[in-house]
Amino acid sequence: MAEPPPTTGTHDRQQAIYRAGLAGHRPRLPITHDALAARAQRRLSARAHAYIAGGAGDETTVAANRRAFDEWRLVPRMLRDIAVRDTAISLFGHRYPQPFLLAPIGALELAHRSADVGVAEAAARTGVPMIFSNQAGRSMEACTAAMRRIADHAPRWFQLYWPKSDALAASLVARAEACGCDALVVTLDTPLLGWRPRDLALGHLPFLRGQGLAQYTHDPVFRDLLAHTPADTTRPPITPRLLANVLASAYHYPGSTWQALRRGHAAAAIRQFIATYSRPDLTWTELERLREMTRLPILLKGVLSAADARAAAAAGIDGLVVSNHGGRQVDGALASLDALPAIRAAAPDLRLVLDSGVRTGADIVKALALGADAVAIGRPYAYALALGGADGVAEWIANTAADFALSMALAGATSVADIHAGAIELVPRTRS
Ligand SMILES: Cc1cc2nc3c(=O)[nH]c(=O)nc-3n(C[C@H](O)[C@H](O)[C@H](O)COP(=O)(O)O)c2cc1C
Image (cartoon, rainbow, N blue to C red; front, side, top):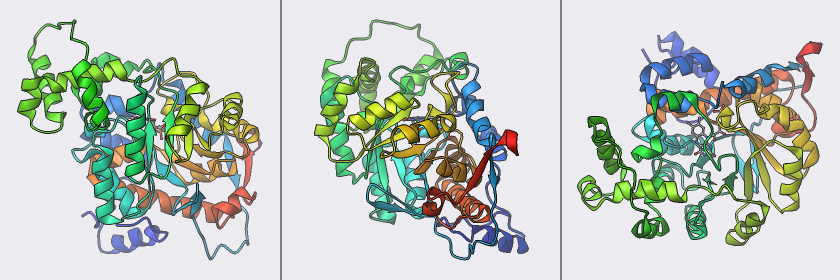
């Protein structure tokens, strides 16, 4: 029998699980990440699982991300009065209840029909910030409305892939401001898609089926661009699968599926997305223009080099997401955690969010102790979404929050400020 889903990420989640156990209830979701991932794999289609779980090349960086956490060992400290604990953090003038955020994940409709809206509901119920993906399956307006129905000021950020059209970039940023986003994350590590063998083997990219395009298809500038969409010069052979994909793309287009098919809007949107997606020629100079477009704090996502961190600080950027995109872009890239100490030293005044490979409360403690202001987590919540929709994500958030609160306290710190002040003792594994 499954216990009722938790509505908030609470410190006493552990007690609640044991109490529910007395009445014969078990948690809905597996507790460990590996068990969660395994159960989600059974639920997901082969294509959805490949897209979510996969990494670039031989996935050596996916593995390195996990190994990097294991290279550090906590040295728990005793008798520190851990009776009162506070997991909250403050970022860019906003207080968040936990030091973790939901990383931007595209094409979440692959995981669950509620897609981004399900995640937004769970985020609003728990107060954990959600970073809306530029490749979302549901528009930022739909997610914002879902959040506001639960908690008006539920925190949200927006992640931008800089498109070829500056007018489209400005429109996306203006919509993020109108949605009440607290910060803007510009992802730099995906000007081109990495070489991802799992997706390649299946010949599957969700965007070509009209999935993960909601921010575009709901954008007035993008919709104007549809009139100038290049004609389709490639004529793939017509097969039942191709027809199914054409239908699927029309279904994902806003409004009537029939009209999207008849007017060719869905197919045009996909071609326009391919034409406009991302700027491989982007350099530091464009960032100055972004600064003029918005007063939101700007973070750059995908920075792994101390030199790039220094350049970001010099360019007046507010923060970085130290990330290798969960190992999905450059196979052989260093683990994000391994990049963190040098980046913290190079850019002491920037806010640093660390992602890639964070799975447990202890991982979060380690990242904070090594200089992160917060972490972001990706795949685990996508798996929780696949297994339980919004309730699944809320339950995963509650588990992660409780794991973090306990790991922090048992290692000898009572707050994130405490961790940043050096309360946590950490040693390389070779010495432990
Ligand atoms: C299925 C999937 C889709 C993603 N889509 C985006 C995206 O649209 N924008 C982005 O900046 N990062 C995207 N990422 C990267 C995540 O934001 C994050 O960097 C990564 O998942 C962190 O690693 P983790 O999954 O090991 O926690 C995606 C990751 C996954 C797994």
